Length: 388
Ligand code: FEO
Image 1 (spheres, rainbow, N blue to C red):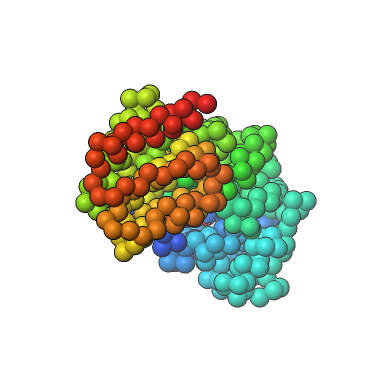
Image 2 (cartoon, rainbow, N blue to C red; image 1 turned 135 degrees about the vertical axis):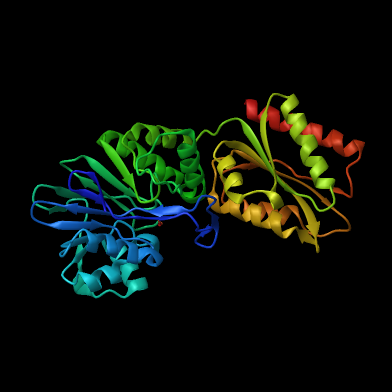
């Protein structure tokens, strides 16, 4: 195992071939599960474990390094990609005590059936001494589960932020290069996982800025020697005022909705409004999610099939509703052949957003001149609202 800071070792795993997270989130590059061993002058602590599929890698690292005693397993988050290896670690190091918060204990017990006497419950006032290193805990619920917490090594001023500030970005280089590619991966991760908890993410970003950690170690992706890079990016992404952009994800069965979406895009661009258009069937959902961070207006384009929205359009609307971007306006353009319910169903999926609805434009069949003129009017309306 690699010593990354004096007495702090990397025990995590790369998983570049994993395609989906939670069977939902696409992982174009795979991911990592970051785990660390801290050897204090008196005690040894393992910070999180790894996804169960990778636990043998972690155990081998410990064995190869001659680790024969672990006093504490610090569990900052109960999701299985970090806690799932706890039973195997406990089997090998039965003396180890799991240090975590009450909520995380509940979740670990729910999923892993660990005995009650294996836990030491901590909160914001707790300290765990490893001798020459002191561990403190910062409850950080809802980035992204109710149990999430940060851990601070006081003497090294290193903050472990669990999922928060992470990225699904496997790399042999443990440290962030702060490159555009790394920040792009962190932005995608924010959009897919943290955006529904934007207000909490903004609060913790400010809190961490005040703490001024020398380094930030998230549980996924590269580690930050220069925390300002990721903290400043989060300050921008969590802003309640999105950029002046219109995002148009559309589904078009026979080209009618596509023609409408492209016409609306061109009309908005003519009016000086930045746009991003997605053919949702052939787009990566993560790319759509990422675009929503900067979207002031979202216009969904949907064909109708079997008297309702095309299932992919319903899925996109449900995803947007779940991710809760800070968009101020939502609208819908669509086309149908004989009838059904479109607008009600799409707008119902968006009701979680704090956005004002702009009346939909749903036409019968392929768009004609009058429909394009209506789209121009819609572009006028959106442009006026965006400027205001
Ligand atoms: Fe990386 Fe919420 O688990």
